[in-house]
Length: 225
Image (cartoon, rainbow, N blue to C red; front, side, top):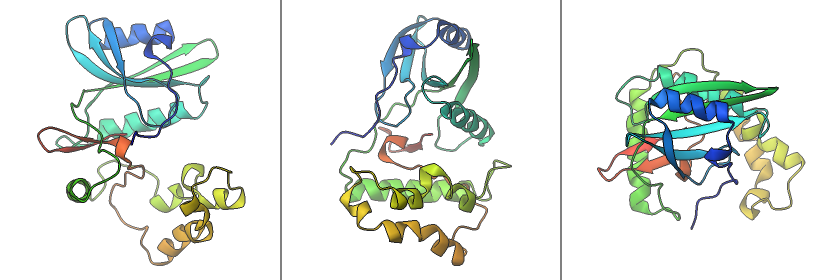
């Protein structure tokens, strides 16, 4: 089963000014871009290979593609830069921004992690491996090492995580499992809050899916995004 995702812009379709900034940040011009699939951003995601043989992972977006996504990348850059060393996450190498007329473009450069997304459907062995890694990550990021992040209860009221929006206007292609449980799902944050289950001082990823995880040949589970 392939990972779901949206069509992505090719790296060579980014504004020339942004690609020039990437070359400068990497210290060598990009000669190839190998796209990565999965995820729901319209911007490119690719492993770049430079003329000197070095590599980097790039993700980028601009206001013409989605006016809200540049702020998501800015937030990701701030969090990634503040995470302590030693966590199983790619190291942020650069946060780049260019303005092209009225357009704003943002690109993040990360170190390349050689690995693969967990295959779908999940197996018990893969799930056990990932859950163990997440438990270790939680222990290492409690208390949260990044100051100023919004509390989980606040994030669960926003559009990307608000089940009431789907309950009030369910799309025709909504999965049957979700469609049959919209009332239950819409009330879940309130029930969790009533039990104080949303309170605490741990860092929460909030977007863990197979395409935001990499399994490395050495057995590590790396968290993305």
